[in-house]
Structures are given as C-alpha cells and as structure tokens.
Image 1 (cartoon, one colour):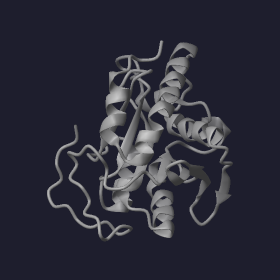
Image 2 (cartoon, helix red, strand yellow):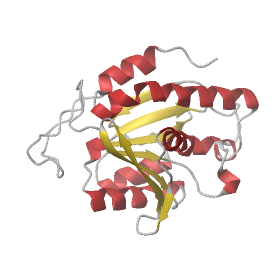
Image 3 (tube, helix red, strand yellow):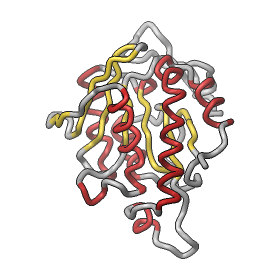
Length: 222
C-alpha cells in the first residue's frame, strides 16, 4: 500500500475536497485522465517501452473513442464517455523523456487534479504478465514518470505498472526496452493489459483499493 502523505491540500479542480493521504481505500477524485507512456512512430509501435500506449489504445477501442492529434497538447487525445463520466485518453508525441509536457498541458486545459490521473507505463521490475497499481511514490528510474513528476511538481498520481521483465544479466537496458518482446512475452503483456479492463470501472469510480485487490490477487496471464 502507498505511504501516507504528510499534509493533505485542497485540489484545484475540487477546492471543497481535501486530497486524501496516500493510504486510502478511495481516491480523492474519480479518474478523469488515463495517460499511456511510449514513443511515437512506427519504429516504436510494438516495443516493450510502448506498453502504456498499447493499454490506452485498447481502452479507446473498447470505448469507441477515436484518437486525434492535438498540437496544443503535443499528443494524441481521445474523449470517452463512460458510465463514470467523461474520461480523457492521452498519448504524448514528445517521446518518453519529455512526457510530462503533454500531460501537464492537458491537465491545465481541462483543470484536472493530479489524483484524478492514471499513468500506464512499462515496468522493468515486474515480469511479463504481472501488473500492479500504485498511488504516488518516486519515478524508480523511469524517465517518463520522472518528467511527469517534474512538470506537475508532485508524484501524487496513480501508476499502472505493466511488467516487461529485465534483460539478461549484462544486457543493455535501453536496447531491451526499445526492442520488441518475443511472442511468449508479448502474449503475457497483452494478457495483463486485458485484465486491466476488468478493474477499470473501479478505477474510474476512484476505488483504488478494490482495483488493487482484484489485480494483485489475480495470477499472471498464461
């Protein structure tokens, strides 16, 4: 579970609400923005580093929400109507290391608070097929998370960590994340992304604990 935050503050979008400490069963706000991290362009389309892009692409298909290029956000965006309300999907065009610029631009434009944001990203420290939710924390060496935290001035957003595994001992990490997984790993990653759909209603309502219980207790995809 996340560690407790030190001093809860009112959120900008909901000034009447106090942002809940990190140890919580329900978020301060339902999820209003789902960000997928990745690199733009066909060369990166199926790479491990683009697991976040694949997740939001899957959501867009399921919610019949087509992406369109938005130059003012330096991103592809989609507006989805869900039972929980309107949810924005975002894929930055800025490349991974500058992801925060696109995220912050859309959040400012639509006045979305950090605790209403879910960021989906690849995770070296989880095996393929494993997926984990987390609220707040550091960037763990992930440059996309690093830049988002720097641009927002806080790490208090929800992270959806999609396991891609690590290269063999002595292997180059950059080359690994920018390469395509083999067929077995690709199927495991796709299976993990599929399981996320089962908990999206809970996430969109802001019930992180329920979504975590469901995802974290499920066995990895076969």
